Image 1 (cartoon, rainbow, N blue to C red):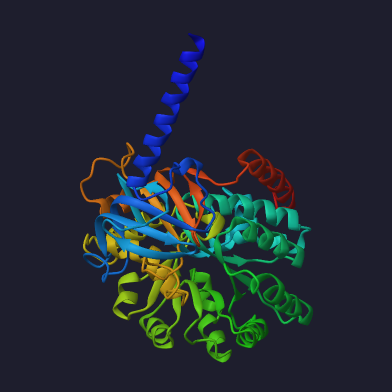
Image 2 (cartoon, rainbow, N blue to C red):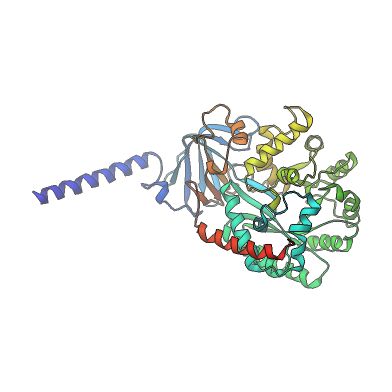
Length: 472
């Protein structure tokens, strides 16, 4: 009797496995569930029956965001293979898209990831006071590669969790070891990143930047280099040297520009003119304290702008003139801006970008709308970086950088207007999947390969060291 029961049990189990395999085969995928599948950027993955796909490519769907309902997104290795309905995908690994929204990953145009170590610092100060309390003292302090690594590691995991797939890291590079630690953490993160190395007139540091490009940036297909500087007439030799180095290396210059009223007396625009730095490819951050003439000049030069609304609000810097920039067809995207953002939440950044303009104009139709700000956070950011041929939309052939948002969560449901809800309702916890170059960095709601307890403990130890180096 026991032998007959054993045979029956084996038969029942075998039948269940066969039926399960047949069911998954009907879905166009391997006989395996997403939870057990490999999503490392090789082979083929299909996000099946996504309730909404915002491609950011009007040629692929409806409206300016290229929207599709009940559609599939197919990834082949590191690239987007197909987007459409009822696609034949063969032997693909399947992610269930029902009740989900698929859209490109966010492009963070401006960040200082190490500043996760000074979260909450000097919350009652404007820009100059905050810099004096939380950043400037570290240029004369023994900050280490371990400090940079710990802070960047923590912040990189944080930005992944909110759907960001490309981050621009403007590094203060307090010393070369500090820069090495940040670069190591960025490389391990598998994010697509641009590293803006703070330039100088020092030949030794310039040689180190050349080495970093040759040995660290160029071998990594996810990495690019920029040269960072703070333009002012008082700092002109460094501005000029930074522009020359950027031209030599064939990379962009990245500057903080007209962020606060204090910048109005620094001669920033004049320094950029004298250094011949006002040209296409120049990335400018903040650009708040502007005149019409400034905007005309910047627009004519074809420079790009990173808008950082949460940081601007926290530091009482003012409100960017987004509608006027739009009229001049300037390329503007969104950024987090490190420790004064107080969150790595790009959805929160979008809400602030919309809300600031409405609050200051009392006009609910003012630019940007919710559709506008979603484009700014994705394709607009890619355009500002000159990377729109590679990322920013779900156009087949582009890199497979995208996110999947759960629209069935209690803070998001029910369905009314999902475009508006993406901006006004979404929280990072709603981002269930994040892919960079076809590799899942966030999977079923969890950042992949992260020992959270160790990352937090290491960041706490680094923050404790940093705090002792700052004025009390």
